[in-house]
Image 1 (cartoon, rainbow, N blue to C red):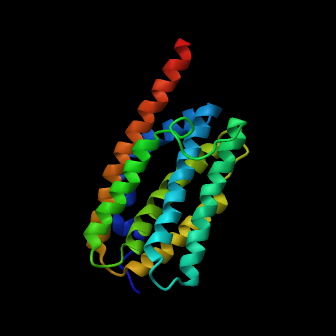
Image 2: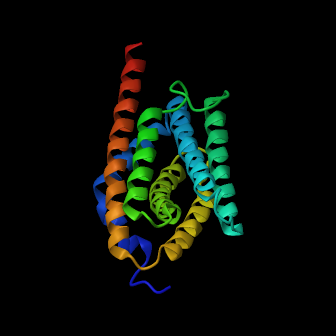
Image 3: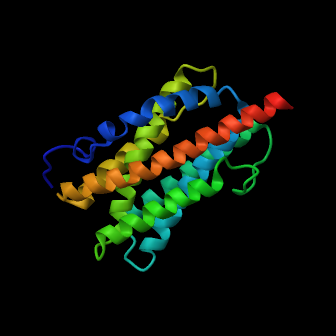
Amino acid sequence: MKHSGGPWIISGMKENNAQHENSVRAFLQDIVKQPQDHALFMNMLSMLEHMGSRKIMLSQMNKTLTEDSLKHLAEEARHAYFFKRQAERVAGHALDGYVDENTMCRVPALMYFGRMDAGISKAVAPDDPYPWVSLIIELRACWLYAIYQDVLDASDLQLSLKSLLAEEDMHLAEMFEMCGDDEDRLKTLSAYETELFGKLWAELCISFANRQKSLLAA
């Protein structure tokens, strides 16, 4: 399948998200210094990765499951486990499940994923939404985790996302090939997700700021 450019160029992902990069980087630089808040944030990422693996399973259960689909599902589930394990290591205790007490912005994160999934599925119908939803998710994951890794490299934390990033980048390439040459659709869907992501990140910044105020007031 020939394309006029890669998914980053065609989607406009980097240009569309330039408005968010400073805010995201500043948030991550601050939160990695606060172990308990960092744990809640990582547990939220674990939840989102879990939702991604569940989306693959549910969307493909009535279709012929290929080796690639099963591999993708398994790797997303492993990413959920990775973030859960690291969250518990940083917190120093178990963070069972995904509840308000142990997951930063649980409800806004659920709404972000649900609205993105529903909106993309509606936009691509009657086509299979799996590759399109996955493509947009992988674009976001690669963008966010690359900034996160930069912040981790500059910190004292013994935590690396490099192997996870490599897998997400591979998934991105695979989903891009599956989606074909509909460049206008990719641009539209990426812009739609960016709007939802901006709302989620604003909620994260507010939640983190409020938690810091509460600690100072205590």
